[in-house]
Image (cartoon, rainbow, N blue to C red; front, side, top):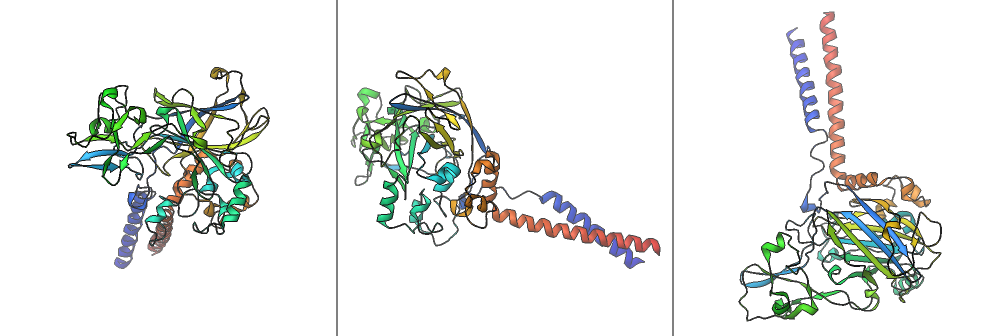
Length: 465
C-alpha cells in the first residue's frame, strides 16, 4: 500500500510538473530578434499604402501615400570624431538605432516579358542565400554580401547564385525584354532634387546608363570629404551630430548636400567633434538614369509620406526601361522602407495589374494637360507585408507545399492573403526554433498522457484493493 501511494504521488507530481512546464513554455522563446543571425521582425507585419495612377498621351504618374511615424532623411554621413573624418554608412539589421537610414520606395514594372512576375511578383527575384539572409553556410565570405536580386532564367541552377548563364544567353534574354524596370525613390539621395533613381533587374540589380542623382563625397586617398556646405549660401559648413540623430530636417537645416550649394572641403578649418557632412553629393542625373521625376516633392505631413513619380511612356531606352503604350496592360509590385530600415527589412506588395485605356485589375485614369486632378483619380488600397526570408528556390522546391501550384502557374493571390504571407515569412525565419518547440510539445504531451494514464491506473487499482 505504501509503495502504491508513493508511486501515485510521484506520478501526480510528474503530471503537474510537466503540465506547468508546458503551460509556461508553450509558444514562448520562439520569436526573438537575433541580430547575430540577421533576424529582426517588425512589430507590424503589414502596412497600408494608397496608390493612384494617371496618364496622358506622353507620361504616366504614380501617386503613393503610406504611414510613417517620422521621416528618415539621412543616409551615408561623414562624421568628424576623435580628430579625424570617418564614414557612417550603415545597413543595419532591423532599424538603425540613430535613425540614419533614409525612407525609400521602390516599384518594379513589367510589360509581360517576365511571365512569372505577373503571378508571383518580387518573390521571383529572390535567390537562395541572398544578402542579409541568415547564413546557411559558415564558409560564406564577405563577397557573398553582394548577392542581390536576379531573375530565375539568368541562372543555370536556381539553388546556386554563382551559376550565371553565359553572356550570349544573358544578352538574348535581355534583348527579348526579360528584365524588370525598377523605380527607386529615396528620401535623401533623390527626393530633394525632384528625382527618382532608375534601375533594372536582370542577372543582377543594375543601374541604368548615365549619371545617377548622387555621387560619393568621400576622398578615399585623403580620408576626408571632397566638398562641404557653402557657408555663404547655407550659413553652415557642416551639420551637427546631435541635430542629425534627433532627425532635424526643417528648412533651417539643409539635410542634403547639392552640388549647387557645395564648395571644396576646407581642410584648414578648425573642425569640431561631432561635425557631420553628407557622404553623397546630389547632382542632376543624365541618360536613362534620369527618366523618372518627382512631381512637386515627396512630402511627409501628418504621419504620412505623399510621393508622386512621373515618367515618359516612351523613355527612348527600351533595354533599360519598360516602354508603355495606351491600350497596354502592365504589372507592378511596390515596396516601402521606413522606420530607419534598409536591405530586406521592408514591406512589399503582391503583383498588381494596371491597364492603360484597357480593362485590367486596375485601370489608370486618363487626363489632359500637365497634371491630373487627383480628387477625380480612384484611390487603390494596397496592403504591403513583411516578406521574411522566403526565396524563389524554396518556393519552387518540394519543401514548399504550394510548389505544385506554382508549377501549374497558379498566381499567389489566388491562394494567399497578405497577412498569411507575412506570417509565413516569419515562420521561415524561425523554422528551426518552431520545429524544436514542436518536438518539445510532442514529448511533453506524450509524457502527460502517459502520467495521466498511469495515475488513473494506480487510483483504480487502489480503489479495488
